[in-house]
Amino acid sequence: MVLRVPADGLDRLVEQVSLVGTVIDRGTTVVDATEEVVDLDAQVASMQARVRALLAAATSIGDVVAAESELARREAELSC
Image (cartoon, rainbow, N blue to C red; front, side, top):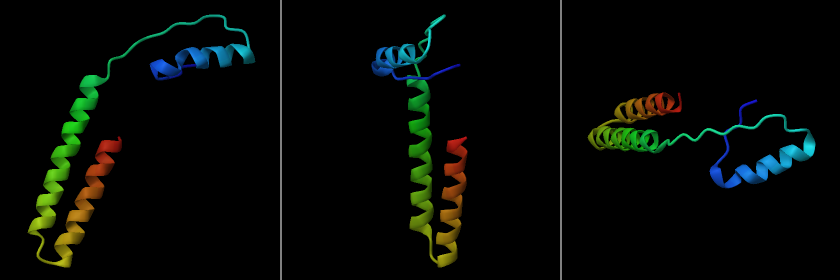
């Protein structure tokens, strides 16, 4: 079983799990996701700026619908 737990909740989780069964082995791995978060934040900011530009340039309902479609496509990319 692999559990991903924020650091501040680890001790409490281990205590709760040990009440349910017997802990045979325990290991921890720390992953610094700072760069991943910063990269994702940059991607989101870039996409938001592009969508705002598309909406600002929209001159018809069709343009707005196209911008909304592009936004939905980009949001789907980020969720993968």
